Image 1 (cartoon, helix red, strand yellow):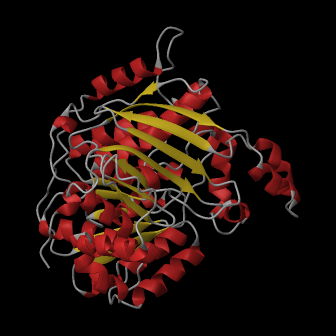
Image 2 (cartoon, rainbow, N blue to C red):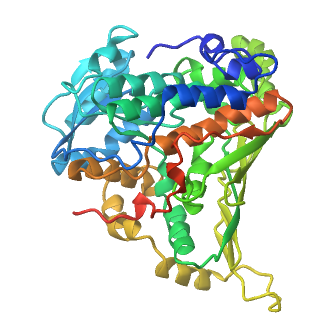
Length: 471
């Protein structure tokens, strides 16, 4: 796909760059005021919140971007295609090798060959029509997620994008505006919302095991230095280039998405404000300097993203969230997955559970494995109970959560039901990333998180992920 100029699209460093093509605020106008004006001008109404459309018996899927993630999600469609729930009708990428590989991959489980859109950087635009597919599966570099999702919806298709679905405040508002105007689904495919541990915790929280939940800590801590420096893994090293133009939390949703489900965010509570701080940068530039590639060595001076970003977030109901981001430092993978309630506490990586027996009990140890297993068995989420055997028998992706995610997307469209996550979820979680950059640039200033639901978040409703679908 086209590799855009990051300094042009993402803007220069600082608050002005984060605003992208917003009207630049005056000396007296705050980012809060600029966003409020933008949202008012967009006329957001919340009309896409419970969106459902006519059932689609066989969902036609167009896959955009055939790199590592695109290949993986094609695998996740294998069973759904064979069962007649879906069909891959189009593929698009600028790289002919990836096109050929995807054609061979799809031919292993689908008789019909998908249409191919390639040859020019803008070839993907020709595929954005409901004459081609019902849903656009967007697996391209981040800078293309919003333009592709918008083009899909305007072409009467539904949009299903990899994370993050946007990384400027303007793009977040635009996605909501277009989804409301077109009445098309626009979902950010946050696979961690479908992980077994996260769904188990959600089930316990909703059944009252945690009492009143008050605080959570979540993160994306993943050493990506080797992959970002590899010229073949992220083609044209597009992911590395973001770290030359941006400083903040560039990848909020793996940690934040599940916590927002725990806290009923947009379904009775909402995120209200944040403050963000980045540490100094060291690890990534050192890796670049130590590379044997002289071009990479010269890039060491260009890194601006701090090694560790920490963002504190508040909610309307007084809960607090600590969100971290670090893909520079050498450490084991971790999403933290910490949840604190008045009756129980959980820490992830490894999973540990504490059940409170009162102030006078005096216990200060995690449950033994056998005790914890009892809670896992008792509170296994129905979605995992139903799909774990199916997931185990087919290509899974990240331990099964990718399969469950794609299963829910396609089956909801088959049945004409609202999706588990909507455009407001994806836009808000992405907005947190954009505002973290603004806060860092402004010396960790508080940033208000705007309401893009027109007050719809105040309605306390069960999370759609708990709905049971037909076979």
